[in-house]
Structures are given as C-alpha cells and as structure tokens.
Amino acid sequence: MSLEDEIAMMARIPVLAELDAEALRILAFSADTRSLQPGDILVRRGARSDGGYFVLSGSLSLVRDMETNREVGVAMAGDLIGEMAMIAPTEYPFTAVAREPTTLLRIARTLFQRVLREYPGSAARLRTTIEKKLAEFNAELQTLAAGTKSD
Image (cartoon, rainbow, N blue to C red; front, side):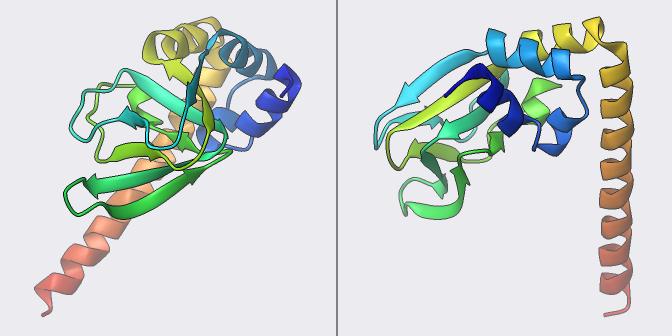
C-alpha cells in the first residue's frame, strides 16, 4: 500500500480528518508499522496505552474476557483503536487479537502531540470536535439519568 493510500484511509477517521493534509502525511510517514499473524495479541485489556493503532489491512477481534473469548467487536481495515490514547493515558478496555494477517500503524502519543504542536490549526479543529463529542455524550448521560429518575 502506498503512503498516499494510507493517508486517504486515515483521512476517513473523524479524529484524523481534522488534521491538515501535511500533518496526516507526517503521521502516516512517521508511525511505526506492525504486522501480526492470526492469534497474535496486539494489546491486552487493562494495559496502559501510549498511542493508537490504525488498521491498514486484516482484522482484529476485540475481546473483553479472554476466558470466555467473547468478542465485543471487530476492528477492520480503516479502523482506529485507541484514539483517546493518542491524546491522554488510558487503559485498553479489551484485548485485541489478530483474526488474520494484519498490518497496523502505531501512532505514538508523543508523535501525535508533536504533530498537534506543529499544526495549531489542526489542534484547534480537533479540540472543537472533542468538545462537541463530550457535549453529545453529556447530553446522552443526562437523558439516561432523567429516564432512571422517572422509573
């Protein structure tokens, strides 16, 4: 896959779509490429995160409980795992296991934050997007809370 193809895929992710074209180019060029074989574990539930993973090809099972092997989701080509981990320390809420040969870009938090410092317009647009998402989330919580009070 060419660098231009990777950039085009990344631009479809809402968080990354806020970045300037050159900022996206730097992320795609500077991110570490990681290849997994079926059954390989990318991240374990509860592990501290230091960045996100963009799936270039293949797919990952997202498993909450490895004992029951209950899949709670699937990350496919074009998906981003750990978008908030690119901004702040978090813990992974699932274990991600390769379902097939899978190639990913690891976007380290330090790289992402450096790009935001170098492209303040991108940072401002991203901040606005995150503020909007938080406001929507807060509104959903208030709706849920109001629904439980009337029960």
